Amino acid sequence: MAVGPVVLRTSGHAAWDDLATWWLSRYKISTQQTYATYLPRWTAWCAGRPLNPLQAGRADVERWLRTVADSGLSRASTAGHCDAVASIYQLAFDRNRAKAPNLA
Image (cartoon, rainbow, N blue to C red; front, side, top):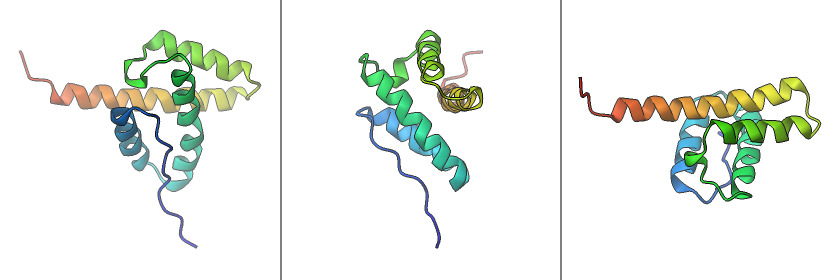
């Protein structure tokens, strides 16, 4: 039985949802399934503040990771959460940099 791409729940922030869907599509299905459990934890944490995930800063991510670590997940799982969120923000940064005009 073939398994298709993972579909994320919407976060209420269309631009974030578009970015997350595009980012997730770059991975194989098994990785998508793993990351599809991590990202909703991040967006739910943001929603509880209320914080648009695209306006979050490093301190926000660090506070969230502390929450993840304190929830009893293993160090490896906490690191996976960190890697996933860092990766999506790196993609957003690279994408925005590619769109920025060259002022040099």
